[in-house]
Length: 330
Ligand code: NAI
Image (cartoon, rainbow, N blue to C red; front, side, top):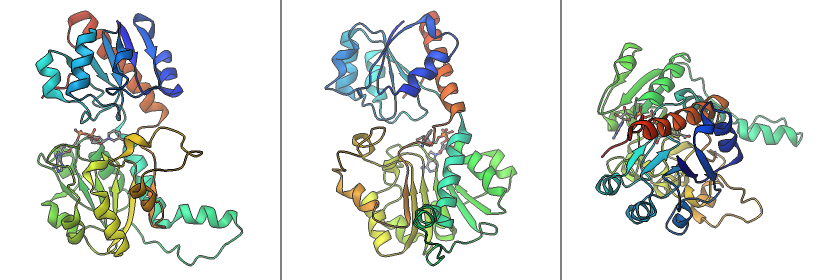
């Protein structure tokens, strides 16, 4: 199949090229994001291969269909960036990589947690300046603390497993409780109770109309004073303005983000020479108790290899049967 690949970085291309079966399709690798302004570059392709910040709204999907594209291959698990209703109405197939490495994201969440708790980001800078004072670096033992996990699917379950190793009490909320989590002692409670009791709250639910701004001003008001919030799911699950208000009021103890609701204009690019235009994001970076990474939770060797092989498996299945291996439907 002819495939146009959007938002390509060198590592995406290398992972696909190294994957067995790469030669069975022809790829046109583009650095550009797919949106209404770039969609014409899909001319001649039967499939487009996209990532988290490509925009596949109704207009873009209609334009892709007119160009002859019949398959959208996501190289990610989340699919909030695709108008699935429009894709279905057009008869276009959409597929994703449902599972590549829950460990990659769960372990990155743990990295954010420990960085914030033990102030590693501040200690790193201090020691390099020859400043060995400990004032301001005080942390707390994770052992015996309560961790609340919102969404206990593949990543949430893996994160729970990591936290049991620390001897934490685990609370969770999920419309579909996970038996593996219950077996490891996780207690399912409603979200308000989870927020009120947890020292650390970690978000692992998908972005849907129900979870958009799930953590808003009311949710922050219901959190334990001084608690930590971690978001490695999707940016818009958290109302960023409400987070800034809670940080300024010092009710929110610390914030670790791998995702941001307006990350499309920022992440996966080097803007170090250009400056940041987004004032809300820039404000977040001024807090010493905020650590932000640029959507790198998935970024391990293992995950990239798994994403590439599942992407090829989706393409192979569609080429052979007209159906991808891991379809996403409405
Ligand atoms: P999953 O589909 O296995 O699990 C999601 C869980 O969230 C399910 O158990 C579901 O029932 C639950 N859920 C749905 N609505 C909820 C709500 N209102 N409250 C609480 N729980 C709710 O998905 P997986 O693989 O664990 O991924 C979770 C999310 O992580 C993805 O949707 C994606 O947005 C994000 N992600 C982030 C990455 C990164 O690099 N930072 C990489 C991969 C995924």
